[in-house]
Image (tube, rainbow, N blue to C red; front, side):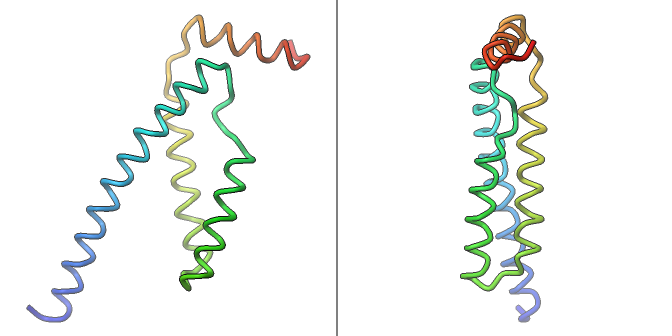
Length: 108
């Protein structure tokens, strides 16, 4: 096997493993979305996103990975999480809980 073929095989294996990890992450994001919906929480959590963004920025510096590439990948992951968490059909309970949470915050 040539060097190119060996490298391509490694890339293929890594890509397939990344897809499996994406599936796992998506499943967890759905579970988080269910929990947020039952608590009347919004889908996005800027504080959590900022913390993870800082970790990714730090890691990309440590491993000498282009920060722009790392952050684009992270933004893709954020967008997918928001998408799967937003795809939930609103139930009467989730609407009630959301309204109650907004009312407690002084919003009607």
